[in-house]
Image 1: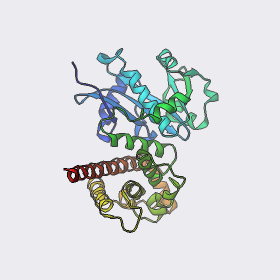
Image 2: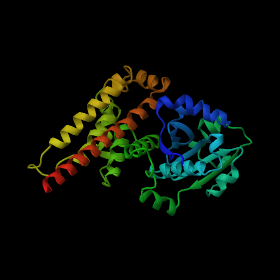
Image 3: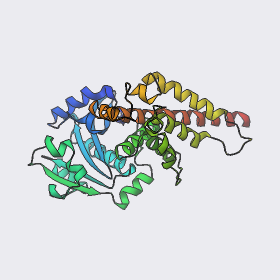
Image 4: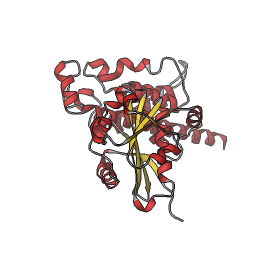
Amino acid sequence: MPDPITYRLAAPNDRLGVEALLHGAGLPATDLRESGVVLILGERGGRLLGCAGIEPRGHAGLIRSLAVVKDERGQGLGSELAARAEALAWSGGIEALYLLTNTAEAFWARRGYTQLARGEVPEAIQASAEFAALCPASAVCMWRQADEASQESVAAGGDSAGWASPPDAVRAQAEMLFGAGLFCAESVVQALAQAQGVEASLIPRAASAFCSGMARTRGSCGAVTGAMMGLGVALGRDAPEDSLQRCYEATQSFLRAFEQRFGSSNCQVLLEGCDLATAEGQAMFQERGFRARCREFTGTAAELAQREIAAAASSASRASESRKC
């Protein structure tokens, strides 16, 4: 029996392997980083077997970059990757998915997609590099709306089943929310709250002032402060007599891990001196493609915080079992 296929989000060091896979399948890859595509990878034993991506464009999204290595085709991996990409999109609040295809019209039709004239596609989708320049005019345009069955699948956990680890699913959710238009702190706290089953009218709005380095004041990275808020949602106290120790320890551990990964937790430092409060800083943000970097901060902060939440829960469970003995 071959080892099972595992699924995870692509990391920056996966770029060359993903590009090679897409080039081999005749698919565009030059815009992946700049377009904010969230890629899901399928692997067996460390070997990349396939990928699929979602490019969020507000409440609409592109499903794209679906490719499988030749020796794994025809065995259902493409359908599985497509299903996971769709579930990720629905869980991130995307209401309709669009695509362009030269060769896979029948495949997508089986998944409920129907043809649509390019002129009927939302402007945000038409402005994407794939629609505007990368795919030929002869490519077939198709679309699909989120339906009740899709939402029920997400509610049942279909968006996280089979990930290499649950924090991967939280990272995916945070990156999807960021791509759909929420900012760093908002995306992280909402993804973490949803992972704990928390729904509140103040989330994500309570995090809005923390975005962009504390409201463009060159303060802490919004992804970091959003993660700290999420840690409070999961591990904080409800009464004065309750202990803060568990929450503080998890937050301190999270901060150490984030700063070890990126070298700082300050927005301006992370963005190489970019001052988002100035016109020059805004131009620098655009010219250097810092949005892609902020998406990485957002996803990583959510993942690291969720790992701390899981570790704290595991520790509390062990302590409870010990008291029973």
